[in-house]
Length: 439
Image 1 (cartoon, rainbow, N blue to C red):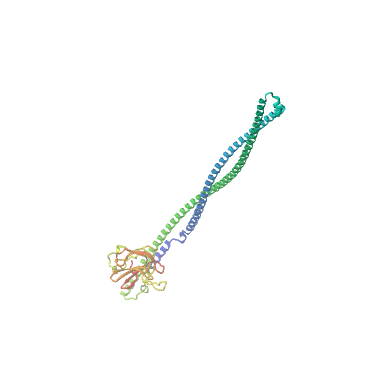
Image 2 (cartoon, helix red, strand yellow; image 1 turned 120 degrees about the horizontal axis):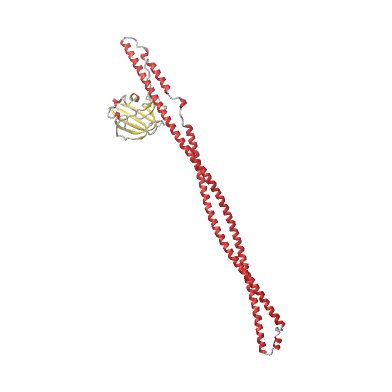
């Protein structure tokens, strides 16, 4: 098979092996759904917290209402006891008034009867009484006796009247006290009814809040399950995306290697064709005068390790490994956006990746470098130096010795904002193309 046909065949096979765009995966819809779910979860949590706070306040209010109702019941019980005692006392006083009135009536009746008898018998007339008795001394004694009886009867009537007035006054006071107690009892009853109604309203509020909170917690549980499911789904999709990316990179690398191999074979064929023509004294064919471009690697996968330790720097040409893995974004001699050109290579990679020394040497600079950020420069002997810039952190001090594969810092960004590592190789101060040194 001719070489150019081999190149075309390899290219066609590589294209056929490339994943179809129709099978591309994306987490965007799930991320949007997850963001929506998380937003709803946050909103629901805030709503639940507010309702739980209100519920707690309502429960506290119910407890206070119950305590107030208990105090009101105690006050009502005290008032009822007072009312009962006052009513009993009033009934006793009224009975005493009635007894006094009855006794007064009887006394008045007896006095009236006695006076009537005296008048009938003429005993009201002292002179007549004296003339009707033979013994004047007895008559005198009878007069005194009748006077004492009349005075006693009058005093008894006066005492009964006074006692009756006192009892009536006490009865009036008790009736006033009962009226006051009735008013207090009515007011306490109204207060109790208001407290009971307030407690009932608060219980209804608590019942509704409890129902709302239970529904919200149920909804929250479902949303959290949705969040877990979406997070798991996104992780699976990302895992599949990463698998496909690595597979695509692997196939792209195979395609690139196949193209490189085919190009080198074709160039070797053309070189031999040119040599054969020269040996035979024939003109070199036009096809043999041109070289097929060898595709360059766009990614850096093989990173510096201890395999180069103990070896002279010059001996590593063609076998060296790059200091960090990533995307080859800036090539030696290519123009930069600010108008200058790359004197080395720029490897785009995530921040925080370890940067490895490509060979043994001594750190001769470890500090910030204007325009390039933090930088480390290593002297490898034989007038060879390597430059590493754009570091987020420097891991080696000036003057320290390093071995091939040692970490000298971590990736960050250049002062221009480009994230990754800038790497140079210099010999006697002159920049060399690092891609000519890596295998």
